[in-house]
Amino acid sequence: MMIGYPTHLQLPLLTSDEDSSAGEEVKAEDSLFVFRYGGAKGQLELNDSQGMPVVWPQWDVSAANIAITFFAALIIFFTLVGNSLVIAAVVKERRLRKVSNSFVINLAVSDILVGTLVTPIALAYQLHGEWIFSRSLCDFWVSVDVTCCTASITNLCAISYDRYNAITQPLKYASKRTLKRALLLILIVWLYSLCIAIPPFFGWRTKEDGLVSKECKISQDVGYTFYSTVGAFYLPLLFMLFAYICIYRETSKRTRQWKRGPGSSKMISERDSEQEAMNIRMMALANEEHQLSPPPERAFLQPQPPCALGSAPGWVRGRGCFSEALLLCHDTLFPAKAPSWR
Image 1 (cartoon, helix red, strand yellow):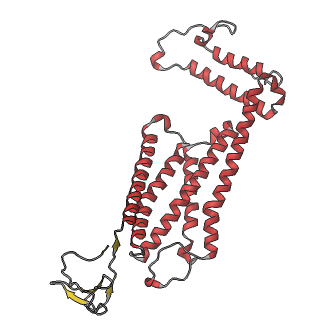
Image 2 (tube, helix red, strand yellow; image 1 turned 90 degrees about the horizontal axis):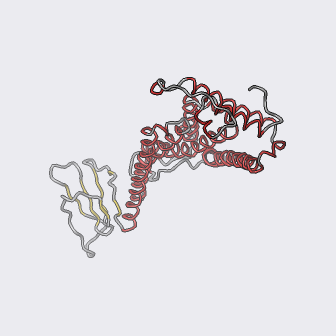
Image 3 (cartoon, one colour; image 1 turned 90 degrees about the vertical axis):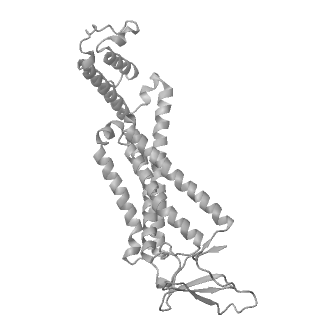
């Protein structure tokens, strides 16, 4: 069943005995268009008053296309709702307002752009079977598709890079993980995606058949195909594989050291020992600063005197005892390489 003509027009019905090649012409009242209806092919041609053909889309409403439309609508709905909930959760929940989650928001934004600007036009293209829109809209659709999809993949690389640094060098990277640096990395992600999408606008494309072409697809030039495929898929894939392999090796190493217990201090490298010592020191200093500057609502409470390290669990209530306990634990675990900064 093909739908492509106005319902208010009364078109003559041609039987199989009539000559279908000639067709019939009908001019609607107060209209500048002449409609030609061919009975054999069941097609409708729209011509203006000067006889120039006008493209008139015809939609195939078969069962397969109805199913495609239904599932595409579900994909669009869940894409928009799911990613919107992710953004709302990060914005509303204070505990989720972290620098690392800015990459998650960027990933959700790129997916929303795909669901709003790419998928609906792709659905219309699929249902009609040919490109029924303008050539400029075709260029816009293809460029947005390539840009957003590349940004989604590249953003996964940014997330893996953030996790790699947070695990392999936590102290050094903690001072560098700022919102400004995260926004700069997000900007690099989008600039990289644009570098993959815009070369066809500067001539890196195949020769077209002009406006007669009824297809809209990415440039089929061999060089650009290799460039876009490697840049949008294989390079990000290799980067993520390298990052997560390093993360796995680092976590496995720390897990083995943890299972060996205190007796394995000789197996720990000097760099790891110094890093652990710095961790203990920073936690101790942070705890001392917190104890010396109590919240306003607790300022009127009289502080309790510090307790001895060898006392019962009541040491938790003492001022400064938590720091001493941390230092004692560190000296016990790393007796040979413990720094003398206490």
